[in-house]
Image 1 (tube, rainbow, N blue to C red):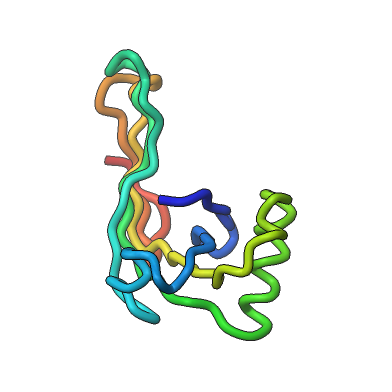
Image 2: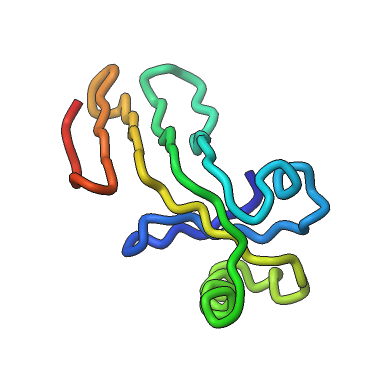
Length: 117
Protein backbone atom coordinates (compact mmCIF):
# COMPACT_ATOMS: atom_id res chain seq x y z
CA UNK A 1 0.00 0.00 0.00
CA UNK A 2 1.32 3.49 -0.74
CA UNK A 3 1.56 6.15 1.94
CA UNK A 4 -1.88 6.58 3.47
CA UNK A 5 -3.76 9.09 5.57
CA UNK A 6 -6.20 7.69 8.14
CA UNK A 7 -9.37 9.64 8.96
CA UNK A 8 -10.64 8.42 12.34
CA UNK A 9 -14.01 10.19 12.02
CA UNK A 10 -14.82 8.57 8.67
CA UNK A 11 -12.86 5.38 9.47
CA UNK A 12 -11.18 5.53 6.09
CA UNK A 13 -7.74 5.55 4.49
CA UNK A 14 -6.84 8.01 1.75
CA UNK A 15 -4.17 7.30 -0.83
CA UNK A 16 -2.86 8.88 -4.02
CA UNK A 17 -2.30 6.57 -6.94
CA UNK A 18 -2.26 6.94 -10.70
CA UNK A 19 -4.99 5.23 -12.71
CA UNK A 20 -2.32 3.32 -14.63
CA UNK A 21 -1.10 1.45 -11.52
CA UNK A 22 -2.01 -2.21 -11.27
CA UNK A 23 -4.10 -1.82 -8.11
CA UNK A 24 -6.07 1.11 -9.60
CA UNK A 25 -6.71 -0.84 -12.79
CA UNK A 26 -7.80 -3.90 -10.80
CA UNK A 27 -10.25 -1.92 -8.67
CA UNK A 28 -11.68 0.35 -11.35
CA UNK A 29 -13.57 3.39 -10.03
CA UNK A 30 -15.01 1.38 -7.09
CA UNK A 31 -14.43 -2.12 -5.68
CA UNK A 32 -14.45 -4.30 -2.58
CA UNK A 33 -10.98 -4.59 -1.00
CA UNK A 34 -9.20 -6.27 1.90
CA UNK A 35 -5.77 -5.55 3.30
CA UNK A 36 -3.32 -5.45 6.17
CA UNK A 37 -1.41 -2.63 7.84
CA UNK A 38 1.35 -3.67 10.24
CA UNK A 39 5.00 -3.25 11.10
CA UNK A 40 7.68 -5.93 11.01
CA UNK A 41 8.58 -6.57 14.67
CA UNK A 42 11.52 -8.78 15.61
CA UNK A 43 9.39 -10.95 17.85
CA UNK A 44 5.80 -12.26 17.81
CA UNK A 45 5.20 -10.65 21.22
CA UNK A 46 5.44 -7.20 19.60
CA UNK A 47 3.01 -7.74 16.71
CA UNK A 48 0.54 -4.87 16.29
CA UNK A 49 -1.56 -4.27 13.22
CA UNK A 50 -4.90 -4.35 11.48
CA UNK A 51 -6.60 -6.50 8.90
CA UNK A 52 -9.45 -4.77 7.12
CA UNK A 53 -12.27 -5.20 4.66
CA UNK A 54 -13.92 -2.30 2.89
CA UNK A 55 -14.48 -0.49 -0.37
CA UNK A 56 -12.11 1.61 -2.47
CA UNK A 57 -13.31 4.38 -4.73
CA UNK A 58 -11.78 7.24 -6.64
CA UNK A 59 -12.86 10.60 -5.26
CA UNK A 60 -14.08 13.43 -7.47
CA UNK A 61 -14.80 17.16 -7.13
CA UNK A 62 -14.97 18.82 -3.72
CA UNK A 63 -14.66 15.50 -1.91
CA UNK A 64 -11.35 14.90 -3.70
CA UNK A 65 -10.16 18.46 -3.04
CA UNK A 66 -10.81 18.21 0.71
CA UNK A 67 -9.13 14.82 0.99
CA UNK A 68 -6.11 16.08 -1.00
CA UNK A 69 -5.73 19.08 1.32
CA UNK A 70 -5.67 16.78 4.36
CA UNK A 71 -3.25 14.40 2.61
CA UNK A 72 -0.92 17.26 1.68
CA UNK A 73 -0.89 18.50 5.29
CA UNK A 74 0.22 15.02 6.39
CA UNK A 75 2.65 14.48 3.48
CA UNK A 76 3.83 17.90 2.21
CA UNK A 77 5.90 16.30 -0.57
CA UNK A 78 2.61 15.08 -2.09
CA UNK A 79 1.88 18.64 -3.23
CA UNK A 80 4.06 17.85 -6.24
CA UNK A 81 1.90 14.87 -7.25
CA UNK A 82 -1.14 15.02 -9.50
CA UNK A 83 -2.34 11.45 -8.91
CA UNK A 84 -6.05 11.02 -8.12
CA UNK A 85 -7.21 10.65 -4.50
CA UNK A 86 -8.79 7.34 -3.50
CA UNK A 87 -10.77 6.53 -0.36
CA UNK A 88 -10.70 3.12 1.28
CA UNK A 89 -13.79 3.04 3.51
CA UNK A 90 -13.23 0.48 6.24
CA UNK A 91 -16.26 -1.68 7.03
CA UNK A 92 -14.54 -4.32 9.19
CA UNK A 93 -11.31 -4.05 11.18
CA UNK A 94 -9.51 -6.68 13.24
CA UNK A 95 -6.83 -5.06 15.40
CA UNK A 96 -4.20 -7.38 16.85
CA UNK A 97 -1.95 -6.14 19.67
CA UNK A 98 0.27 -8.81 21.20
CA UNK A 99 1.87 -6.18 23.48
CA UNK A 100 -1.38 -6.40 25.51
CA UNK A 101 -1.15 -10.20 25.69
CA UNK A 102 -0.59 -12.88 23.08
CA UNK A 103 -3.45 -13.02 20.60
CA UNK A 104 -5.22 -9.91 21.97
CA UNK A 105 -7.67 -8.78 19.29
CA UNK A 106 -10.40 -6.22 18.88
CA UNK A 107 -13.01 -6.41 16.13
CA UNK A 108 -14.77 -3.31 14.79
CA UNK A 109 -17.74 -3.44 12.40
CA UNK A 110 -19.03 -0.24 10.79
CA UNK A 111 -22.67 -1.01 11.58
CA UNK A 112 -22.22 -2.10 15.20
CA UNK A 113 -19.24 -0.32 16.78
CA UNK A 114 -16.47 -2.07 18.72
CA UNK A 115 -16.50 -5.64 20.03
CA UNK A 116 -13.83 -7.51 21.97
CA UNK A 117 -12.71 -10.83 20.52
